[in-house]
Amino acid sequence: MSDVLDKAVHVLKEGGLVGIPTETVYGLAADASNASALEKIYSTKGRPTGHPLIVHIASPIHRGMSAEQARDAWRDSLSVWSRDVSPQALLLACTFWPGPLTMILPKAKSVLSDVTGGQETVGIRSPQHALTQDLLKRFAGGLAAPSANRFGRISPTSAHHVREEFGDDLLVLDGGDCEVGIESTIVDLSRWDTHGPVVLRPGAISKQEIETVLGQSQLSIKEDFSDLPRVSGSLSAHYAPKTKLILWDSKISDIECSDLKVAWVHFTKTTQPLFLKEALSCSDYILSDDPIDVARCLYALLRELDKQAYDLIIFEALPIADTWDGVRDRLGRAALGSGII
Ligand code: TXA
Ligand code: MG
Image (cartoon, rainbow, N blue to C red):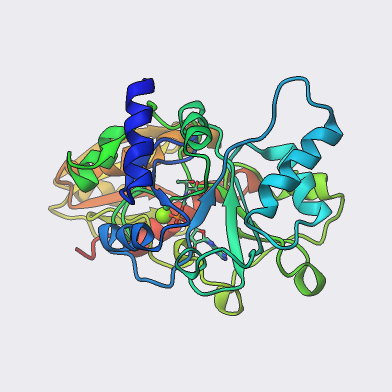
């Protein structure tokens, strides 16, 4: 594996792109301090410029460090990217990093506007995947990495998915299937004085967990993003399959599916709605009751369904409980963007 890592470091130092595994989804990485490398991310993904990127950093933590040493180490690492590393940011880093949490902080002067989308803030995360931590340490710099999918499409959770998106010319580090399966939780700490901490994107680390660590309950999930920095995953349509996807709950008595090939994705206990009798064919897909399991396989399932030439995917709406927030958010956006191409 060390040969591949050496090659990846070389490609990145030369301003190229590398597909990297993380515990959430695969990323399309470039040197965060190289403007022309960052430009390649936008052109390869087809992502509009001006959408900010997350900078991935190595964990400075070593076995045997005291809590105070760990705090100092994170402060040093974060100070490279942020001009104001607050005690709250350090608390979250010490608790959740490396892990599926991105923090939005005031940017340091040296951070390129190609990373921040011209904003005064920067998104930073230290991912948990061992291979990518190894890469980050060898690279000795920050890697900007959006999810390794074409803009608006389903995020990749395996090296195979990344190759499906971008072909075999891209070097992809194969770190197996992603453990978490949906993108990191994003918490904005840059407007503490006026807004408090704000969750911009729900993920595996819940609002409650963040609230508990920060010891306060003023954390709000912002649903109107209009006055917030641009978050491309917050566009209403995103993560979308090409096949039309409809979310169904028992309040919807009818969905037109006569003569259609339908995929029916549901929890075990749900009885088939009557309108499905009209379908030309109906294939069952059973969901786990555990949001962690569903998150892990959600994008792979959407990709698989997209390949099966169904006319329509009907997904049973998810439970309202907070633990489902991340999956519900992605599925809602997937439904909105589905069936357009
Ligand atoms: O789990 C993840 O976060 C994955 C893996 C690869 O780390 N990355 C990811 O990147 O989801 P991307 O680019 O697909 O989504 C990052 C989100 C975007 O919606 C972007 O707008 C937002 O983070 N973001 C980045 N910097 C920001 C900033 N300064 N202010 C507000 N939002 C920001
Ligand atoms: Mg993305």
